[in-house]
Length: 84
Image (cartoon, rainbow, N blue to C red; front, side, top):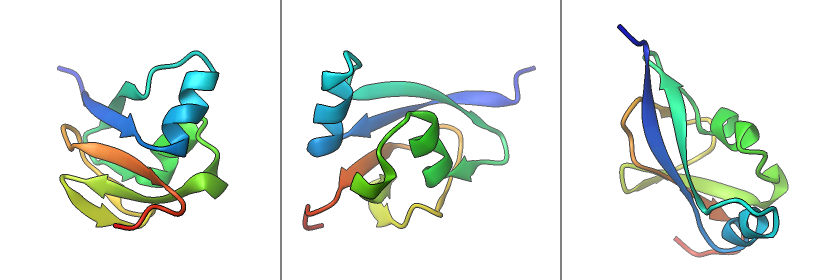
């Protein structure tokens, strides 16, 4: 039995543009371990420029990047300068 589950991660605004300029989609599937992982860890794994990441939506609620993401959560990174 797998201890990791796929979680869909979306990037908006300037983060979308960063991914597009790298030839990558603005949506990615990531494997999140059963115990969860911080949003910051996911952002680093996706090679997002951390200075451009303001916050993260997890299950439609805004959080700081130290928030734990669990398998199956809905995740979206928000760039700096976007009101939420």
